[in-house]
Amino acid sequence: MMATETELKLSLACDALQRVARLPIVRQHARGRGIRRHLTNVYYDTSDQRLVAAGVALRVRRVEKRFLQTVKTAGTVYAGMHSRGEWEWELPNHKLDLRLCDAEPEIAAVFVDPALRTTLQPLFTTDFWRTTWLLVFADSSLIELAVDRGKVSGLGRTTPICELELELKAGSPQRLYEVAHALAEALPIRLENTSKAARGYALLAPPKPLIAQKAGVCSLDQNASAEEAFQTIVQYCLDHLHTNAAVVCQGEDTEGVHQMRVATRRLRSCLGLFRPLIPRTASDLVNTEVRWLSSELAFARDWDVFLEETLSPLERHFPDILSSLRLATLEARANAYQRARAAVESARYTRLLLGIGLWRTRCDWRDLLTPKLLRDLHRPAIGFAARVLAKRYARVRQGCDGFLQLSAEERHRLRILCKRLRYAGEFFAALYPESTVRDFLRSVAKVQDILGVLNDAVVASRLLTELGTDPKYPAIPMPARHLVLGWKAAMIEQNLAFFESAWAAFCNQPCFWQSSYENS
Image (cartoon, rainbow, N blue to C red):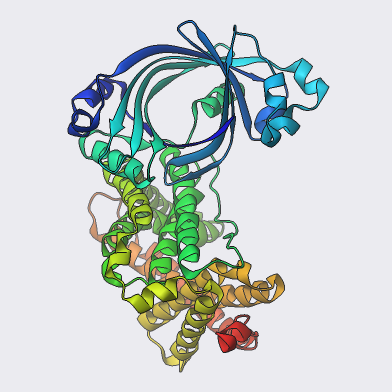
């Protein structure tokens, strides 16, 4: 019989596991003492891993003298919360019985191929001790807290298991976040997006560098309400954020910092976009924490852009003049990356994700809304989208008045307005015909890119000043400084010449939301 498993997975140092039983959240809500069991699991798949390719994990678990066959589907992960389908059957011994899967329509098709059934084999194992407590709350919510310590083994390699799992047995998902938040206040925990099965599969192949992930498409339902759209967009932004966290910590792909920073800007833009329905006071704390993370990532991103888009092109022609500047830049960037990694690995980052998850599931911001705003939340998202897109579009048009006379700061503000318009268009794109949205967003992106080059010149000047005034970095010869500033000045002039045509193309694009705005 199918069940939906909803859980939060949290990792921490093994020497901290023993502190869990003494925590107030456990002592106050645990029903009885913790139960300790030894669990061994054998995971099955074909040699070419057809099950994992289909998003399915198949295992046989031994708990003392009992054997359990389990099938799990990939499901979804949101702010560390895993939701997936789970089927479990008692077995008389350790042998698979795939006839049990045949009776379940949701998974029967995965096992229908006779060739797959005959080629399933053990691929890896997990072996760990689990201590569990059942946490009981006044609203009848039930959460199973499990502490796991052991190892995953496959192909002669092992990786340790030191983690907590919070599984919702009954009640609201907000309780999971409340318990996790309490744990995060007392223990150095981190959200764990990787299941034990995924870690087992990772042992079967040579380790690969993690690759940064772009945001992809925001999958809004055509009939979504404004509130449903808000919830979906917040989840979309958080998925983008946390998917790239491990890339930043690994430190081998500079795009990871870029994508995490984009995700923070998208999330803040989402909060601003829905401010007509969800007032600032309801999201102040979330906004403050996201702004903190964005600022911690900004230093690394600024140095990446300076190195890749300014220094590297110039070095092809003037390597000797710029050699000391490169050394100073690499040192400054290394320090900035250390700062970015420290932020992502910090308890504050974990609390940020858990806090947003709790804020989103608890929805206590609804208590601050008037009856009219509550009604507006339930109205179709497409009407709300049209109104806010029209407003952001008007701000961009207004901000460009007298462009050539704008100061660098005013051009930067115009760039931010373009960015917010593009984010809003991407958030709501699924509600409109693809071709009209695509062409409009491309035209906005072109204007934004040109403004970005203009802003990079300002940032480059600031970074050169930082290097020149900080004694811990090598001295920067004046010829190198003048060369960079001259190059950026030339880029400004070149892009100013491009701006007029890009702006005209943007202004000539049809506003894809117009018909729904007129009808809303």
